[in-house]
Length: 200
Image 1 (cartoon, rainbow, N blue to C red):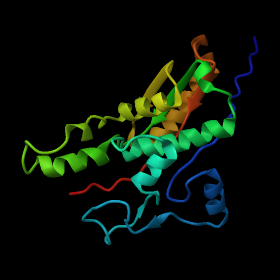
Image 2 (tube, one colour):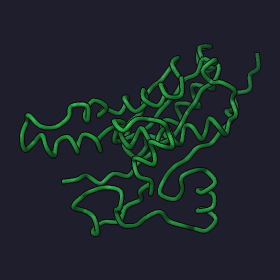
Image 3 (cartoon, rainbow, N blue to C red):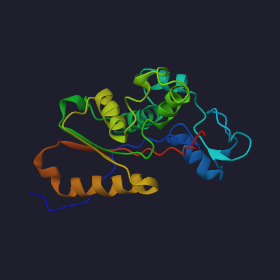
Image 4 (cartoon, helix red, strand yellow):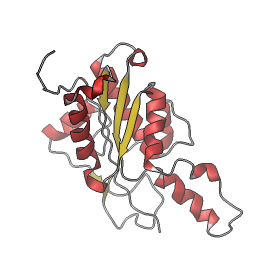
C-alpha cells in the first residue's frame, strides 16, 4: 500500500458574484473584477442602501441549470450548480457506481425560504406554507445535493459561519489522507458560500 498522502483536486466547480462557473471566475480574477453591487436578486429593505455580492441568476434560472425543483432553497441551487460543474470537470464516469462521500459547507441553509414563510405566518399563524421551512437547516442542503448527484455512502455538513468552506476543505482532505477508513472509492468536497442580507 502506498504511503503517499498527497490530496489531488480532480475537478473544479464554482458559482459566485464574480462568475457562474470556473472559467468566468478565472476571467474575473485576471481582470480584477469585483462582484459587489446593488441588491437585485432579493426583496429587502436594504435595497439601494447596502452593497452585496450576489449571484446574478434568478432562482428560475438556477432551477433550469440544476434540475432541482422550485421548493429548494437558493443555497441548494447554488451548491448543486458548483458540484455538478466539479463532477463534469473531473470526468468521473457514473459516480453513482462508486462509493462516494460528500462534505458540504453552508452557513444559511434554507433561510431564504424560511423568511418568505414568516412574512405571512407572523401576520396570521394559519397562513404560510410549511414546505417553505422544511429545508431550513443546513444539513438539508447537503442531502438535497447529494441525492441529486447520487451520493449515498457518506455525507456531512459543516456550518461554522464564514469559515465553513475552509473547514470543509480541511476535513475532506483529512478524510482522503486517512483513506476514508476504506469505505469510499472517491471523496467529493464541494464549496458553497452565499452572502445573505436578512430581510427585516
